[in-house]
Image (tube, rainbow, N blue to C red; front, side):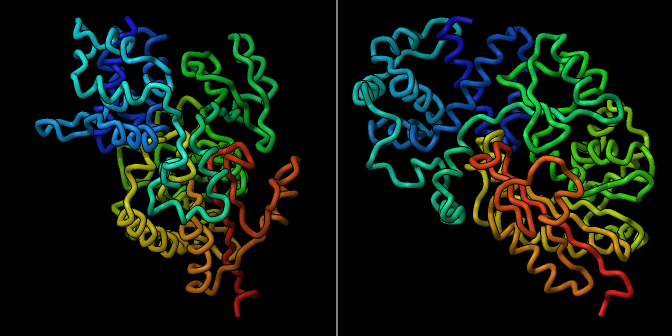
Length: 444
């Protein structure tokens, strides 16, 4: 693709993301699938360019408004994505207006020619820095104004880390390989993985190699999974022969990890309210060689199935729906999609799911609450409310559990509960609390 065609493609792809309620990665995958003529190098360039622009969206929008670039008022048409792309060329790419005009010549496959208004705006942006002292705090932080205070004292460092691209982490499938085996297989395909510092099953790759095209992935030796997510699954402490339920299984990432920890022995139920997610999990389970999983579609978190299986599980994992603030590195569009009403709804849902799922844990069994959020009201506050309402559960301090499960030293600041963050731990943001149902003897 020519530079002009690439620019126009990034604008069209950004417009598709803005118009679709699905996460950006799903939109990008479908958009590229419909354009098989786009080569692999162009695909990587387009994806990277669009994601980088999403990470700079608030600051670029601020500059567009300052320079008078159109953001949607022109004949009712949404001009935002084109204006953001032009502003990025001027500010980040340091291109002068004449060079931008050559890209936007109106020729085939390229952007339409610059309007007089766009020329005037770009001239004002020549030499402008991306960060400016007059930008509000929320603009510089690339975070909605209403959400910024919720990050607390660590907001500046945390949001800066969340604005960076995430590394590519893999989890070694213990049903098929050891970590040295997986490293050897990936090196044979000219990839250079490094062991992750916390997870004993993790491998980290630099850049964005096409792991799905490797034999190691196709044969089920490795699976894509952030190191933080791996740790959350390991803290469930699922063991061979146990009865375990992944109550909000989704596409099965943690289900796969639980099955491997159980060595395919025992019963593992993967539950979800969306059938398409469970169907997607089926392919991953087959590739990984997992055969102790039963997929169960639920009508809701109070499905009668829960009552029928009351107090029958050794481990109950609740990877709860959440704001997803901890995964902003991977989903930079998500920060602009969540509203205050969305957060209020998800907080209520988390409490309802915990109250229902806890019925599945047997006396002496464990309920493991996980979110990919960094907001205290979704994490510590939910656990406190649950313990206040459920007198037959107690919190197991993770500082005591960690040495029993991991050889690596614990993350700094580990206490009763675990919060992983990108600026400190190099992982996505995750929260884990382990709750145990008291046995009959221990109950008051």
